[in-house]
Length: 114
Ligand code: 5GP
Image 1 (cartoon, rainbow, N blue to C red):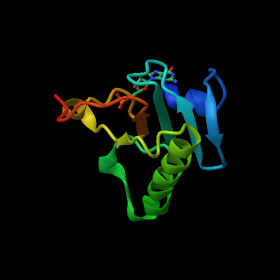
Image 2 (image 1 turned 90 degrees about the horizontal axis):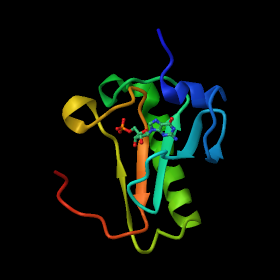
Image 3 (image 1 turned 180 degrees about the vertical axis):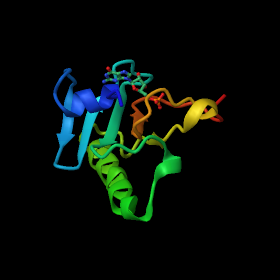
Image 4 (image 1 turned 90 degrees about the vertical axis):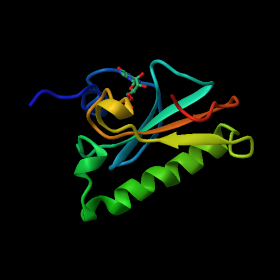
């Protein structure tokens, strides 16, 4: 199966601006930011969509939120506020089929989403 763009970033085949990395997770700037802070927090394990999450992934997915919290503080948006989003499949607007948590902030965000 062809690698997704995120697998290529994880494997360092293409560059990205990395803000956090450990053996299980990488966090990078979104190439097309929608706000002053737009970071993608990506598990290195290939999980295509939220629909494929299993019990064994619960700690991993929970850690994505812990890193979101850490980065929100690092980028000083923890007090002003931010949003964390998983898009799923077509209606959810998912374009890369390797789950990733968007961390978006640094400006007042609109609600509800369209
Ligand atoms: P999705 O739409 O799947 O929730 O989010 C995919 C995100 O990946 C989009 O916000 C898009 O801008 C970002 N993206 C797509 N290709 C690349 C890339 O090559 N590098 C980086 N850093 N982000 C990318």
